[in-house]
Amino acid sequence: MFAWAKERGFLGTTDWTKYDLSQCVMNLPTVKAEKVDAFYRKAYRQFYIRPSFIMRKILKIRTLEDLKMNIKAFYSMLGR
Image (tube, rainbow, N blue to C red; front, side, top):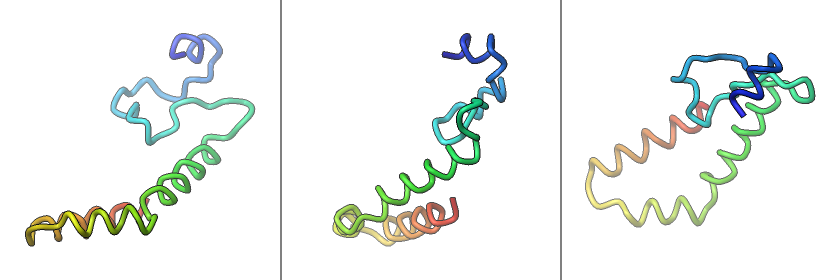
């Protein structure tokens, strides 16, 4: 897919640090990168802000460090 996108001029970047599945690296004529990013954020939040997922995370907390880490992760996810 990389070669295909590069050949057609759809490749947005060759910076490999951006290839982490959370950033749009192609500029397709059929869909804007901003739209892809918006759908990604929406799907990410819908998955992680499910009551069952949150409850499982809460039940796995055993230490104060676990609690701090989960709170930090939650706020980080809201800021995406």
